[in-house]
Length: 163
Image (cartoon, one colour):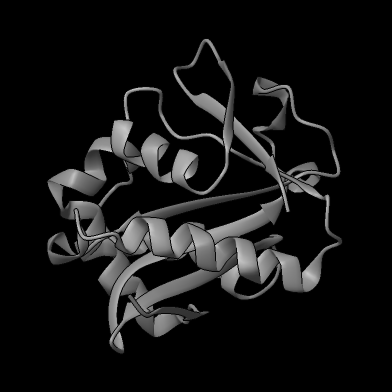
């Protein structure tokens, strides 16, 4: 399976709104499916004001989802988990229903790890925190070598691995 990632642009934000409206996405992201709210949240990231790197996921040149990666030391959420300041993190979703259940998520996490290896030293730790009830995401992480660390009070499962 060939998937790729590219930098997200402002032109992609209406697609994010559509994906956030998909029941399989809304269940986990709980984003307000409104273009103004999405622009307010994501434009600072696209402009480099916030240190979150936004990506569009493509399969056969069709946009099927998005991902974001960051250094945990720049995340206000770090305090919820047992995460060191030098760790990396990422989030991802497949917005297109046709991309679900075909291995695209597993290939995407593999691609994200490759991308991070290009920028950071081997051995750098990566922590990812899907909701504890998100069995599909947890399986994808485990297939990519992530190990379960803890479940925190707010309901997220913490997984970690080294690059």
